[in-house]
Structure formats: structure tokens, C-alpha cells
Figure 1 (tube, rainbow, N blue to C red):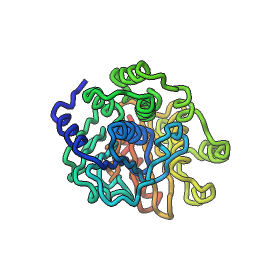
Figure 2: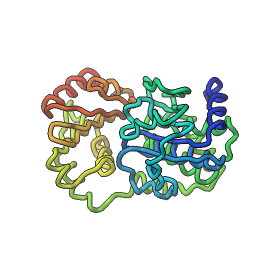
Figure 3: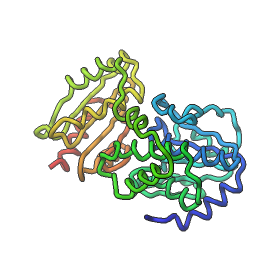
Figure 4: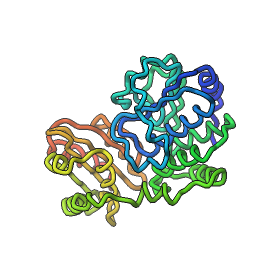
Length: 325
């Protein structure tokens, strides 16, 4: 376990000295982001702090088994915070609509597990890409600060860890990941059945025609090792797709036998594409995403691209050809 020896006193002092605190996650928050924000807010409110939590974009109702997940963005009118805590992102641009929070806060703490941090305004920057989830870092922080792990905090951190490891399926899962999950389950009676069902099994029946479209229109390259799925703008518009409804489709792109990499392209507007890249094993799709000004993790990355679909696919196939063998 890597201890936060350098940062722990700074973090403790900044939090103890603050009365009003904003906790913010990244644009289109996932389970790791939401779980971390909820866990942090639960702890801070228990310390008597005035806390507001924010995240730009779609917030799925599937996370509403955590009561505090319902309270994101309800304090948009606040003009000043003593402290801003940024979780699960280290690039200021990923704050989206909440970039302005940086100017409203006296001090800033950033805690993240992505590579190449880019958050210059931070007073304290904790970046640990060796961890599978930011939730693991928050757990370690709470242990060092001797925080009492309530049921709400345990539920939020388990959600964080489970979501960023694909329910402990992805290769980023480590012995420490399992250790934290075990410790949380020992400290509190977490309803893991509800958490895992809502995040990894439940689906909206209204999406069945869309799932059918994805399966029928998936294409394969490199002897079936790479799958390519494209949702053109007319499909996005027809089904009124948002981030959450698209996110549930990514799994089909990688789950076919023989597929080790996948490209999932969504045309959000005419000529503007959201790209999600996934891989199994050692193929680093983050490096491929960086070729189109994106980034992320080794096995799960993304980007936004403006141009032609043909040009985008040509770039991606060229890059995958270098690594897929």
C-alpha cells in the first residue's frame, strides 16, 4: 500500500480550515466518480461542513440507491467556497460546465488515478495511476485520517471500485482492489446484490431494438480481433440517446469471442464523434486515444473527434494495426 505521506497533512489542514466545500467530478460521471463524490460529501457533512457536490452531464438514476447521488448540482447558485475538492479527474477541461468552480474556491485539492495530470491551479494534487479506481485512493485517505466508515460511505466506495474494474473483471483489478472491497464489506453490511445488479445486469427494455441494431451492425477487422460499432447521427436522434444509454452498449463491442479490442463511435452531431476504445490484456488504447486528443486508461479510453467518419476510422485502423498483433 502506497501511503499519502507527503499530502496527508496538507489535505487534513485544508479540510479542517474550510467551512464551505464543493466536491466535483468529471463530465458525464461514471460510478467511480459518483461514488467518490458521495463518499467524500458524506464524510465532510459528518464533520459539520457545508458541502455541495457537482458533475456536468447525465447522471444515471441507477445510482440513486445512494441518497446523496440525488443531490448533485442543486447548489449551482453558490458564489464562493473555501475549498474545492476535485475527484476522478486531473484535466481541468473535464470539469465541463463546472470549470467556473475553480475561480470560486480559495483552495483546491485534486485526487485522481489517471495518467499525466494537468490541473495547474491545484494546491494539492494526488495522482496515483497505479490504482484501479479513485475510490481506492479515497479509502486509503480515509484510513490514514481514521475516518469512521459508515454504511453510506462503504456503499459509495464499493460502487466506485466495482464500476471502474467492471465488477473486478478488468485487468486493472489488483490484490489491493480486493483488499479494499473486503475491508468495506467487513466494516458494513453493504447490499452488494443491489449495487452489482443495477450496475452490471439491469437494462432498459426500451433499449432492446437498439441492442439489436448494435449487434447486427457490428463489423470486425484483423481476423475478428477488433470490433467496430458506429451509431450514426440519425440513430442517435431517433432513439434520443444520452451518455448513459450509450454506455450500456459498450460491452457488446468487446464481449464477442475472439475480440481483444473494440471501437465504439457515436455521432453526437453531424461531423462530431464520441469515441470509446476498449481492450483486453496489454494493448494500451490510451496511447491510441491520444492520437486524436483523447486519453484515459490502458484498457478503457475515449476521445472526441470532429471531421469525417471515414477519416476517423482510417486513423484508428492505422493505429490498431501497429499494436493488435
